[in-house]
Length: 294
Image (cartoon, rainbow, N blue to C red; front, side, top):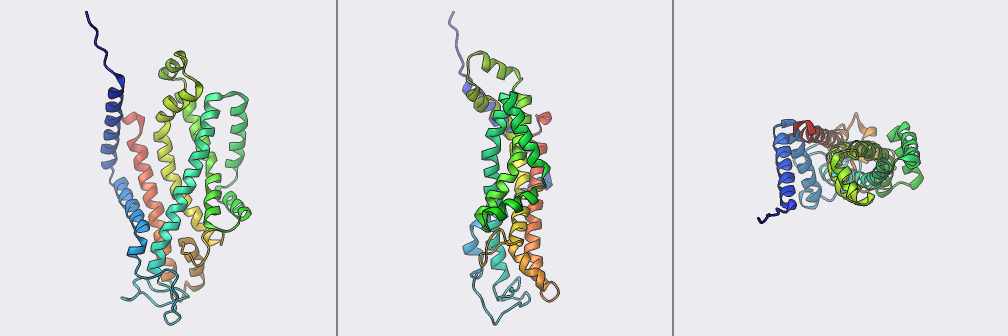
């Protein structure tokens, strides 16, 4: 009697596709998450299409239009150098989103491998990595980022590096905790029993199953990174003039809060919407990717 063997890969692919479809369906049921996703996509579109959307050069000065109130000529007014605030807010989205994405990418690139190694390896290596992680997490995140940015020097690139390094311990601890839970599962024990190497087990069997938790944390951390970049730029450690940044615009606006409040309103509102949208999206992803809902 002939035995027909069915390849496992298509079944796995169908199962993965089903899980993604179910997660997307649960995400769509959460109106706040979809609102956050819409605002995030809008901000990305604005940042990418900034040269086409901005009505003027963000660095162009006009001494005849210094601190003009919002009007048809300048929808958000002008700043202390006569530069169009709307154009600077649009171009400032590039700096804030780039800081959020790049810094969290650095944190993921450093934190996930270290956490995987610590959680799967265990022993003295896990103890040393855990103590270093605890020491870094004991320091306030923003204070550590300011100190590192000051050491590296004022620039947007150095600010992103500082934010990425100071965010790394969060992903080290999260990855390590997830690995400790997953590595005792039966499918990991089976992979180990058939002779798979530790690296293959970590990458092929453990990492895919902890990605949902990492995705949720990354989304929430982008919001924190945007606030951190705005804070560093506000202190002069991030984006340098005349390049626009929401944080540096707030730094300039603090001198004119009484005479020209629109200088602080628009970049402050942009930071508020960006951070709120990423937090709403992260909360929605956390609920949609919850294993208890599968």
